[in-house]
Length: 87
Image 1 (spheres, helix red, strand yellow):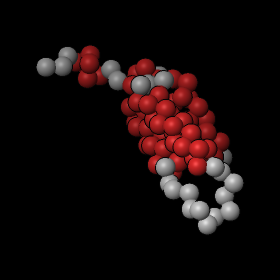
Image 2 (cartoon, rainbow, N blue to C red):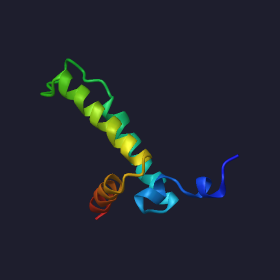
Image 3 (cartoon, rainbow, N blue to C red):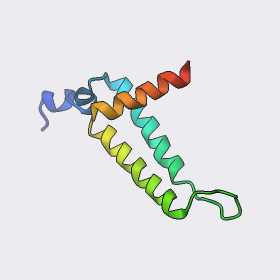
Image 4 (cartoon, helix red, strand yellow):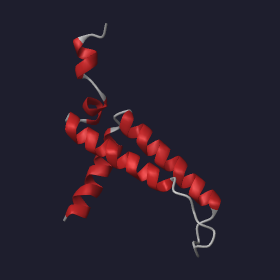
């Protein structure tokens, strides 16, 4: 059985935000990861190489992992980006 401390302490605590904010940031990170995984169409005049696309996917996986671990810097970075896009 999990103790009360284990249930109340989560990645949001480590990140220094409330649970709802953490969930919103997590959803952003997952959306970025899923967007990065979209296939590159060879008929597009896309200048990105497949290796670039693969590397972007790896960075996106690391982004989601950092949010899931409650990394405060990553969470703050995503929140700043969201605030800028809202203004």
